Length: 261
Image (tube, rainbow, N blue to C red; front, side, top):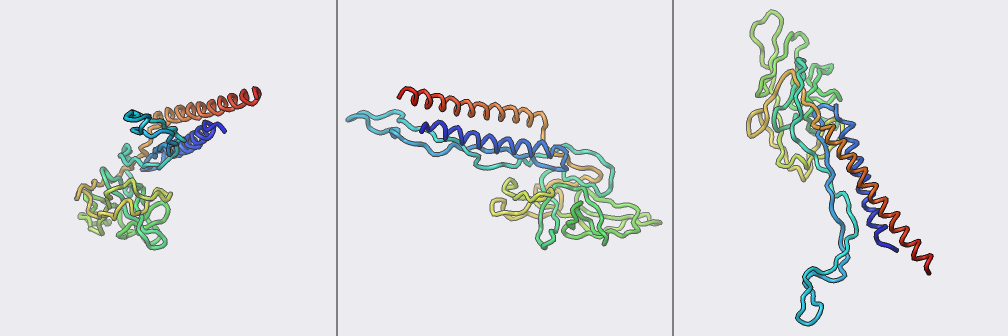
C-alpha cells in the first residue's frame, strides 16, 4: 500500500489536534487570566533505506543516504504564561498578580492548587475564596462589619471598621512560583496542579524572590490574541486540506496502477 496514505493520515490527525488547541484558545478569549496553549509537533521515526555515511562501493561513502519519513504527531501542548492585559474593576476583592506567580487555593480534598484568577469572593464564613468555592491559602477571614478591604502590593490584607480611622491587618497573601510553570497540570476552573515536571512551589511574599506584586481592584485578562488564533486556524485548515489532497493523489495513483494491471 502507498505509504503516503499513512503519512497523510498522521498529518490529518495532527491538524485535528492543532485545531482543537486553537478552538480552546478562542473559546477562552474572555476567561480571566487564561493562558493560551500551542501545539508542539514532532516528526515520526524514519525508514532508513540507505544510512547516511554508508558505503555505496569500496571506498565510496554516501554523503546523505536515503531516509523516508513516516509522518508527524503532536508531541505536547505548551502553555504560554506571559501576562495578559490588566483591566481595572475597582472591586476590592479583585486582585491581579503583576509578574510571575500564582495564588494558592485549597481544594476540597485538602491539597493545594494554583491559579492566576484573582476574582475572589467571601464565603459564608467570611473567608476569601475563588468563585468555585476554593479558599485562599493561607486562609484570610474578613469581619462582616468591615467597610473596606485593603490589599497592599506585598500582599498584606487589612480592613477598616466603621468608626475607626486606622485599618487593622488581618492576614497576608503569599504567592507561589515554579521553576518550570509550563510543567503544571491544567485542571480546569482556572487552576493548576503541581507535577514532577513543574518542580515544587517556591512560596513567598509578593515582590520577593522574583515573584510579582499584587494589584487591587484589577483583573488579569486572557493572554489569547484572537487575531493570531484566527490566522492559526486558517493555517491549520489549509494544512488539513493539503494532507487530504495527498490522500486523493495517492488514491489516484493506486487506481491508475490497478487499471493498468
